[in-house]
Image (cartoon, rainbow, N blue to C red; front, side, top):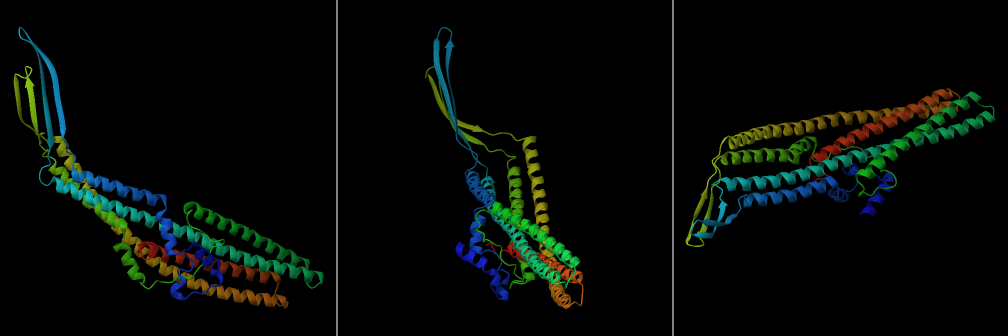
Length: 410
């Protein structure tokens, strides 16, 4: 699979994808991404917390009450009678009052569900980070290609102008102008190469398990998936593990509050006591009962748990509104970014036509070299703007697909 991905990325420049596949042409395969996300330290930590939640659920199911054994061994001296060996032993165990065990089991189940949702959200956040770093690298590669194309064009113009100066068909000033433009283009290439190398280094550092092709793939045109934007927006909220974790936390805090209120009536302890006095002359056995009398401390703990439950409920509402708001904002921004990208494509067409006419006019002597250089720069800037606008729209549609769990996230 890795070799197929490397080959695909290496030949992406000459591949022509159909519109339905265009959005995925510049992305790593989902099967590869799934393994990379599972290997992330944050995801592994969240998986370990699921095991911890399972253990906590088992502890809550069994309850905190355990058998307690206690005893004493002593020697008693009695005047004119002698000394006696005496002992007593008690074995007891607290028992949860009715209803407490069910609340403990429910709290344990909810804890496991919360841990699983948080693990899925950790994968989600890792996927978003991967998508952001990935498009940083892809865009940097495209900007480098664009800058390199201008530099190549300027180098050819330098050679042509040098030849014309030698033939006394151009002035030395023309040669100096085109040489300065060429040097500036080379500087832009170096700057773009630095940005590409930095983007690749960050991508490799954060996702070392992801094999990368030598060069970043071509930036595909952003397209709306078959689900449509409105459905993606709905799925973002419906499938959000962050919302599920927040709702589960609120429900668990409510269960814990009910458990704290129930615990104002302490669990009784029942047991058996045996004793021996005067070296066995007196022996006996009996039942042992202990009942702590709850007071202000237990009442304060119950009040605290109720307050935390209220806070968790409010926080779950905040999370849901934030997720829904971000989804709506992403859809609105994508529509605007898509329009900006389409406008930039028209700008590129016009700028390239102008640069072509300027080149032809300069060769025929109809316009100055400075005008041709300006037209070349304008076309180069238009292409860079189009690439940036295309990448911005592609980032947003990728984010919506990840958030809606239609790509990379199950």
